[in-house]
Image (cartoon, rainbow, N blue to C red; front, side, top):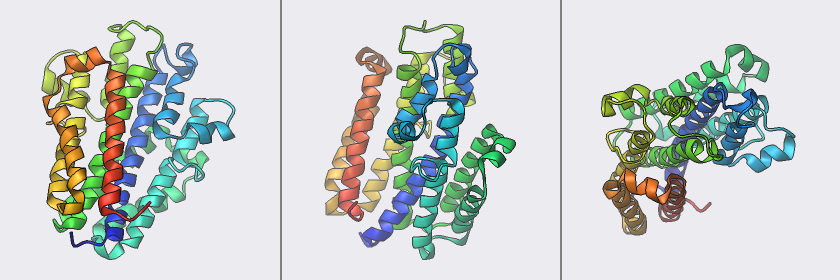
Amino acid sequence: MTVLSRSADHLYWMARQVERAENTARILEVSNRMALLPTGGTQGGASGSEWHAVLQITGGAQGFHDRFSGTTAEAVTRYMTLDPENPSSIYSTVRAARENARAERVALTTEMWEALNSTWLEIDALTPARLASRGHRNFFDWIKERSHLFRGTAIATMLRDERYHFLRLGTFMERADNTARILDVKYHVLLPHGVEVGSAIDYMQWGALLRSVSAYRTYYHAYKEPIAPAHVADMLIFNDAFPRSLHGCVDDVLELLGFIGGPRGAEARRLAGELHARLHYGRTEAVFKQGLHEFLTDFITDNNALSKEIQSAYLVAE
């Protein structure tokens, strides 16, 4: 490996932070959609469970409850969008990505830097009042578009060297983690009290989930059937043709680790290979038999272990 560990660290985490900002927007978007359903939030059903789920999956629950007394849509949305004291907020993750980009300014193309820097400048100028006037859904769509712009400029303009590989590695590690967490929100957190699976509400919730990962139309192209939980789980876990699936992400992680190579990365490649084999040969029926929540929890734990090994092998000490 020829790229310096500190440079690799900046690029890897820059990509993870951009992806994290996008996925936080996706999580907030699906929570907003689900809150409008008859069983959601303020309409008498889940008593704000979807908003508590946002905090749980982003790791911000403790910090939120230290400062806020009620888990309301308004409080959680503000905390997860523009709160500079929340390290998991969109504001904080874009700021961190921009700081990493500034540290690696000479390694980035002009288009990449301008895409990320202009995103940060616009977010930094936002206030809660301006955000409310703009509309939260419009803001979430904008964050996704800016993430796509940054990623697209990287793919279109960067040399295919180790810097590029570390950038892409960060993207897919973060994406795999967030896909698992978004899927777990629907199945484990939103229906914990025996809500009838297969009801109209259940159908709408799965539809909202598919929209949150830009998979609603793709689902019908792939399965050509009405929305069914088993098919949704199959698409987001095992369908390697879908770029946000766990299998698709781990495919890319394993390939990128092979490109990066080096003796220090042997254990990381082994862990990625084990994770890939589980997804390549796994079946949806076995996942539901084990329990979807349990399967996703195991995946998140193993993905975190792989992330720590990548950090130890290639990047600067945390």
